[in-house]
Length: 117
Image 1 (cartoon, helix red, strand yellow):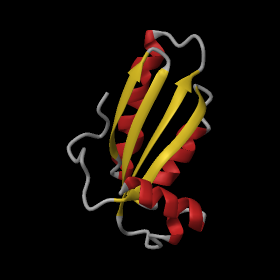
Image 2 (cartoon, helix red, strand yellow):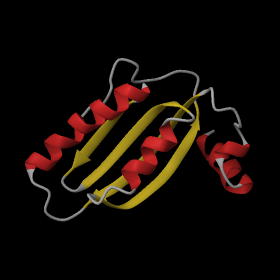
Image 3 (cartoon, rainbow, N blue to C red):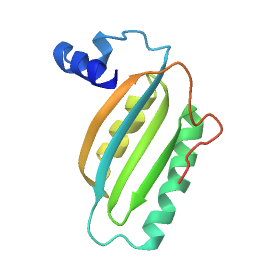
Image 4 (cartoon, one colour):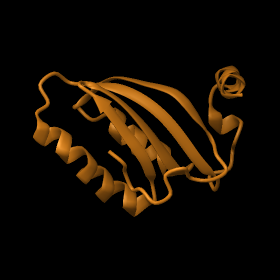
């Protein structure tokens, strides 16, 4: 099913054309590499910053990392999730940001978590 939706997104030029309303629940998954040289302090700052920013927009999600590789799930309203993702995408600590999945979802999976890390 995810493959079919992804194919439709690619065919139509974006998920906005499939799910045009900004009021529905939205989720995206992206992955990235951190810039060389992050120390543990930099990694500790990520969830603190995410909680401060995401709770104001009612964004929840999960950040998983191993060494310099990260995968993150963001979920919230269609108007807020892309805004937060674009801020993250332009953060100098990230490179090779890839967005393999974005879609309408029925409900949040990480409802109680501003950011799991």
